[in-house]
Length: 167
Length: 344
Ligand SMILES: [Zn+2]
Ligand SMILES: [Zn+2]
Image (tube, rainbow over all chains, first blue to last red):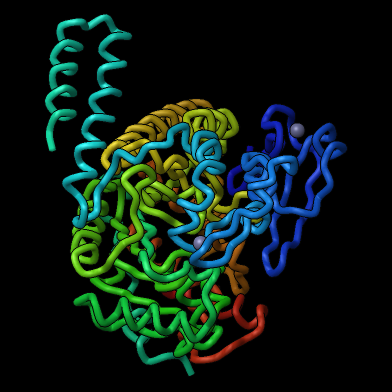
């Protein structure tokens, strides 16, 4: 009986399937991260990068044949696409626009979505509200159709039309 | 030694661990935080130190909240104290210039300037009370957004340095005591369930492999494509489910192994009551058994409030701040044992 503390049998940080049997302490700059890997994944990977970075790099594709990727650089903060992959952090709000096309799959992977439906900022709230309302209605419409609530679906469709024609 | 601003913190435990609120024995606290950035400035990771000051001054001059202290005013020990107090993050405590700290409402509300994002605001409540914590946080955020030009896009929401925070920028977490599940060796199953449902769970006192004191922090993982209310509601419901499992595990343990359980609890209490040397780790683990005793109604003479206070004030930097200087670990263990004997 463990009364006070336990040893967690952890799943592999990479495949999330096998039990982790090997652990590594990875040092990146000042950051120390512990990695827990199964033997299979440990064999496949080198351990130079911390787990979170490694993961995110896999999500942001780097295709060297695409010439535009090489030259992608944020006009505001100067972050390059290569740096974004390495540090897995944006340098400013403009980065989101700069790398937009490349990072959308990343958000899909992390959050399962690419559209904000939460709180709005005061400024420009009206315009944003329209896009978001429509998005939310569409989500509800999908649900209604899936659950075969056709009457509800019809009502939602009308709502969407109303919002779409609004200026 | 020690910054004068910490004097009141040294006298009183924080409000968020006062032992009140729903399920306060099992759920120590509910915490929510927003990550926010300003449109016109580069994020802290891409800003030089002197420009960080400029960002800080901009924020301070645009909001109505005073009493924001520069991190450079705090000594290394002070900063460790603030980490133990859950006001600043460990990463943040290693920084010096161009960073700010704000503490309000008896520590229910806190602020970090130029951490990973320009602004990190948090709100903590005692027990299970994510709604109230969120209400307070949201109000503060509304106030800020009226005078600060937040970095925001209608597609991706609040723009943050790390893509894992993009969208709502909201992280909600609950600190929960799960001795029943650990005891009955069901915890792994629960961890997997939480993981599968998109929640993060980690030991509160943990080096990654061992979890001390049966305290776990459960939080949301997804921040985009979900509303703030949904995040709060989902986590709340998940916590109720976890508590249900925990209670079942406890009932089973009580009916099968009552004598062993009572023995462990009373022994833990006796050690705390009599020890002359107590390491931080030992205290955390024994205090879990005592908490379990309180929860099960076995230990009636210890109050939850008192135990929570001990959990805060026996931490290494707390012990050292209270005597006004650095001491080595043996001396700390003596002080800790003395403090516990006196106050339990
Ligand atoms: Zn693996
Ligand atoms: Zn940029």
